[in-house]
Length: 289
Image (cartoon, rainbow, N blue to C red; front, side, top):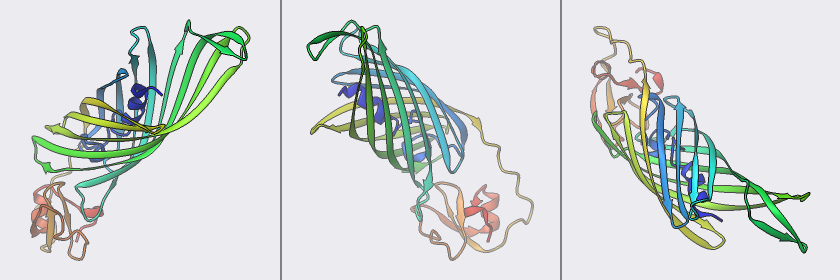
């Protein structure tokens, strides 16, 4: 197993970008910007990899990301193209709306062709014409905002995935296609520094568990977000009730009396619903008091 390959697949759990999607992966929320474009780099003892891609999503719910790049192993001549995609859904945890969990699935494909390597099968020598690998991942990521101000957010996260991989070896002359499969587990953790609700800088560490061995890789993600969400319409004079609500100042959402989150979020303040609306806050679940 190639640790660099494992790192690329595991990074789907922490990207967006690649894998880049709201708090659960330490990136700008799609509630602020509809799309992210970025680059990822990872380094391990076996080599390095670079990718670039685009992710899009909705303020709450589904998101998808696609990327392309190359994987470089220790041998300078050993380079493989990489295509990857990920899709997931973001859920806000209650009663802590500053925390989000995102289950996801991922697909990754690499290929190496025109290889000069040889292999012996049942006493006969074959040339390897190419190697194609497909990896399919299933996992989840959890992240939380530690601070939430206009200029800077710090969002640590952790993700875990199980990945099934299938490898096809193309032989010549007149050789069969040899297929093999295996699986491994990956855990990634890091923290995203979010600047001006537009730029993301996210270092991370990925641990891979395969065949009784553990390997580590270090990654860095950089991205810029665009496609600003249309701002809410201005609140009319006297709009909103005089009911006392709880405003979660981290996310700009307020809760009515009787809600599980009423007065229960880490940071917030009591005020009337009218004052919360004037401050630009939105009612939880879209329902006013």
